[in-house]
Image (tube, rainbow, N blue to C red):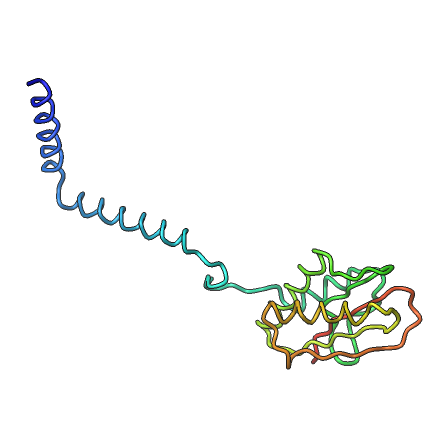
Length: 171
């Protein structure tokens, strides 16, 4: 008998609580639940590659050039075909790009896509590993959205002891 009374009390309390809520409150509650469901679905199915961020602006080529100008080994960012936007150094027999170099290539890629310019990759041709490194750079640029027809290569003879690869914004 007590159990039946207890269940009746719970059910009647529920109805009283629901009837005391206005329709407006019920509507707000439904909207909150819908938004919560949308948020949950978005977080489970979120793909950062498809995320559209309005007013997103990558680093400009001028800022990339300014970063290059801070390098003690670079005298000028001006090049006979454009402006230097990145310089990569390779000492010894290093055959892979490091994380910082890959991050720099991502910045260059985003800038190229936003500003739509051609990239000249210029290298002194002194090491046997140079073609592998150049291929990695091109692959990184392509992977990050730069079109193949916006990339060109130029090899220079040089007497420098380390491999230096310059990325140039072609004017």
